[in-house]
Picture (cartoon, rainbow, N blue to C red):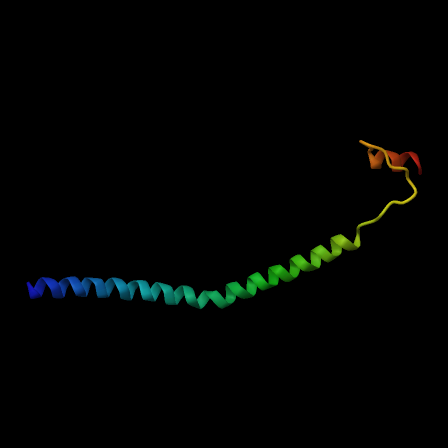
Length: 77
């Protein structure tokens, strides 16, 4: 009975060691992944700023319901 208990604990210990080694390998990648995510957020912020910089406001065109501003702008050129 003691032999069976020892084998069971040994198997569990081997399983835990295997899982810990997998976690350690993954943990090594975490700083690189965090740097990649930070870089993507920075690029997204730059692109958002660029998109906002290219927005325009059209003034002097009367507003109507269900209007197509592109057609109105073409007519007023």
